[in-house]
Amino acid sequence: MDKNVNLSPHVVILGTGASRASYLHSGCVGKPIPLMKDIVDMLDLRSSIIEAGLDLKDIDFEAFYDELATSGQNLTLKKNIEDRVYDYFSQLHLPDKPTIYDYLIVSLRDKDLIATFNWDPFLLQAYRRNRVLRRLPRIAFLHGNVSVGICYKDKVSGLIEQVCSKCGQPLKPSRLLYPVKHKDYIDPFIKSEWEVLSQYLEQAYLLTIFGYSAPKTDIEARRLMLEGWKKNPTFNLAQVNIVDTQPSNQLEDSWKDFFVRQHYGIQENIFDSYLMRHPRRSCEALAAATLMLKPWRKNPIPQFESIKELHEWALPLVEEEGFSGSKGENFSDMPLSSKNHTLT
Ligand SMILES: [Zn+2]
Image 1 (cartoon, rainbow, N blue to C red):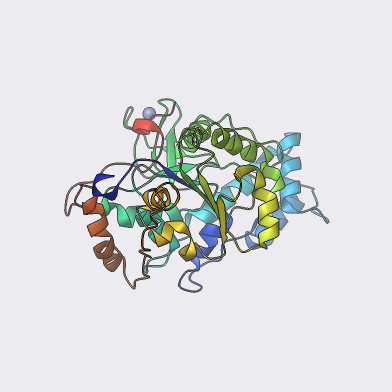
Image 2 (cartoon, rainbow, N blue to C red):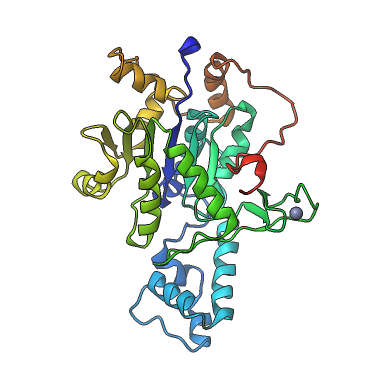
């Protein structure tokens, strides 16, 4: 605990609610993020569906897409829908002022992991504008992402605009995994990202689940997460934080398999969570409070008008970790969790 740092990971899992809260942090800006159930009309997919001789009738988009994918019929329509969704999400941008994703990234360290189910580009946009702080968390994309590119031949992942570090060819868009009942996690990139999440869950001391409601179509995802979490040798000491606006009893019921006794907290607002009250020191603060019975004073992350102010505030914490945020250096490191950007 020299310099008040230790190395137990804090794992944060993000669902749609997290991206939505980040995007709307300073009010409504730009195009709306569609919910799955609204996607047909927001992306004007209805005419293509009717042209293909199909009808949505009363079934929702998830059930419709599930049927489309499972039947293997209408591959052109399926590709058309996927391309439209991909293009729409690719064009979304975070506002300039710091958002929840900026605070989240700055509040975690390079020993920590953010695993997201979201396809939107917000997390990587936030990562890139905070990377001057260098010691940032790893990121895993559990359902693919529009900002990620892949060379499947060389098993290399990177940012979509980059070229493959092995063959020099432009990276190809990552596959987006849709909310269907029987998801396959066989895509090499997605499989590799899940392996990374499992490894981190097996060692984590704190787990924060933010805006992710573990929908019924994610049974397999939930099983994989729980498997990793239960293998954790410190499971009995570890703590779970749920950040969600749903009623507490519903959340307790939904996540009870992940809790040990009373080692959990539920907050509606991410700024009230353990992470934001002890930025970059959440695991140390938890250990001090629960193992040493010496709770630390809170150091809540203030909200700022600019990213620069956020960095000025965070830099002393980064420096305490034995590393100074550099200025003007080339930065080519990747936030992607896959080791050396090569898929396993
Ligand atoms: Zn390649």
